[in-house]
Figure 1 (cartoon, one colour):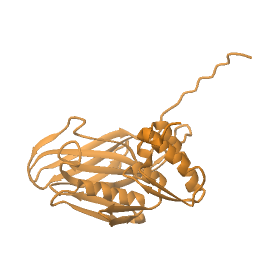
Figure 2 (cartoon, one colour; figure 1 turned 45 degrees about the vertical axis):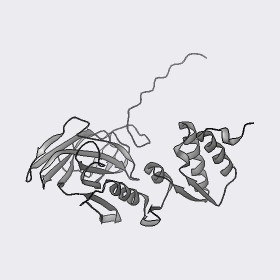
Figure 3 (cartoon, one colour; figure 1 turned 180 degrees about the vertical axis):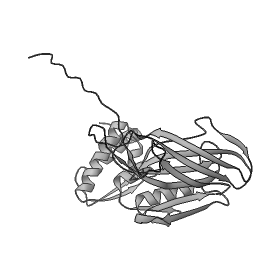
Length: 270
């Protein structure tokens, strides 16, 4: 019973979204609508949008949220100052967008098409680069297929091409849609290397247990100066390597993460 102008921004968005989705439109335009409101509203809105999409409605979704774009869209267009910079698959376009943010003077962005038509996005100044990368299984053998929960390691060879003050390696695992499953870097693990000289070569070994769901995944890698790629980006690689996770010895489960559940059943009445 109050004027809409007196509502909070979140409440105004709830009302606007409810009105726009009260019936199924042929075209639904959403501009950053899911960036406000509480978690329940965002989940409910996502479900409603997917209903429309699955029913055949066209969706025009404007956002900076990579996860939402990958989850909802089958095509993405990157715009800058009214110009189209990239038009294609959402994962390829959002990777290019991330590289563009990291771009600084004298850095470059390029996309290489690998087997299967997937694009690898590479950017950076090149002062330090990843010259080698491989994934090995629990037997220290090169692996393309690994078991759910298996202990694995990613091995990187880093070449330093110019004197740099500090170096941080970032590593992450993405699912087939390009959404980050988990990741961190050597800044956060307090393993920052400083005062590197031209010609230095380092080997990094990143170990973890593949507690992932069955499916295809890719490795993201980055070389930066400190905790993120905004300050100085030596190299940024999306889909540096791909691998598959298979379930050999775990109870059948669904989802993108494996975590053992134990059920206890007790009869408490008749």
